[in-house]
Length: 359
Ligand SMILES: [Zn+2]
Image (cartoon, rainbow, N blue to C red; front, side, top):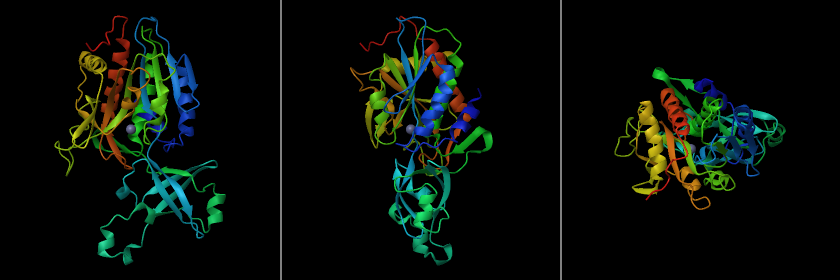
């Protein structure tokens, strides 16, 4: 399977946080032929398992989140204009004038985020981002009833409808790279390992609701026999106008990010399990793959999985991408391909003698 094709297929599946059902079905469809067992948990997490040849080898989970930042219908006025709220952290200043897609039981419905006509916008207004409560979506309907007849009502989720585009030098810009890049990796790794006999049992976890409090990841490992876990996510990259390494260290095109842990503004919040991190680095080194090391800006599912049961040894690897939580998250395909290579080599290399002890 081509990694780019796996990714592009995923961009056609809309999964705003808390409304991941279309992605659950897609991941079940993709993982079922690649795994020995696949199941869907009541919580909505998708779990695929490839059984290893040696029970004494550590079992490993690689994990990505199915949800993406999006929007939800808050109200519909009698003229058919839709008021909406964010689900997760979409950047408000990227919203005006954008295409959106409502995810309804009748299929998807296209809309646009409307705005005051340019000719009567004052210079002051033109420079200001209004609060999301002042914004509205136009789906072309003439009344509230017509909006409802299209399958849209209060509580209907939406996502950005911008298509993925190719830029020069193998860069791709798309909404939802966070975390369709991670889901791409799960499918690609499972595909590359499906016919390879290796000692370790590998779990492929596609979870819900990362963008709203890591909720899927908090529960996904609870009843699985997993010794160690890796979260695969995106990470914010700098090196663009107005963003330098004082603020963001990672850069697109310099390889996957193998994080030391996670940071907030000026403070480290999570330090990953050293043995798991070193295992990833060792695999990258052995394969001659360039990678970057720093702290993830913001939380990921790694923090939640590390708190499961007695504490699962956990680390994270990420795809650096520009313009996080916007409709144009931008990354190098080669970074994603290298991330997949690191995980394949790492999982292949797990053997019974693997030492997870920190002391
Ligand atoms: Zn993410």
